[in-house]
Length: 287
Image: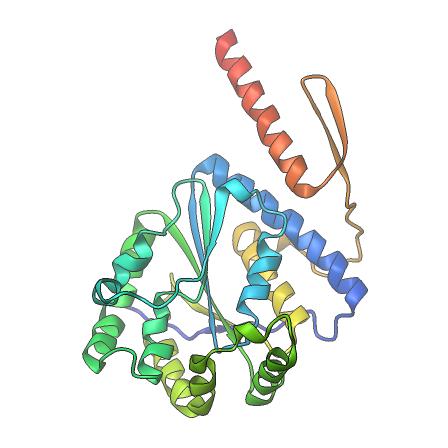
């Protein structure tokens, strides 16, 4: 099995301001919606996983991916503490949540918890850790061979950035609940986690299932860079970032002779799907 270096992505969004960020986010979200519609039409299956330390921005980045997607065809999962059965049958724990044809699944932390936080905090035995490391790529490759598309992001933050964000959470009456004992313990074992991360990159990044490392110290840059990678993964290099093109917030479409105006991206996509379905049904009846 041929391994490869991780893909450390250089961002074209360094220093992006709020106005440029908002406009670029809309542009990328339009492309993500187009990709989702292609996945629906071609009945593809896409898994996108986000790994990283606590407060790296995984959840907030996923939120920007999904803001304007069609809800029926995607799901976001953040699995909690595994049961004894799940811990023993680790891969099956995640397989049961894999997308059906035409769907996307986003994992906020994934099966790679067994390569990172679990061994760091001794939540799994060394035997289970080694078993996982020996089998994970073969397992992924088998699913990819069956048509599953897998994107693996790692959001990387430095100790100072993580500390700043954790302190903000602790002092924020609306987000203090996000802090757990596990977060504090993992923080104290920063160097141990780092060593496990290095081993994960070294042994679980392959040509068809690479790790994509995004600098997460600046959240706005990280969100846009992550979305850009996926857009280019499907559309090639044709997408040019930060062109300044304005994306209208409102959309319109005609369905069965009725004009709908002032639609959000989600409303537009649902009506477009309905229109395409009606046209297909009409064509089949006329044959």
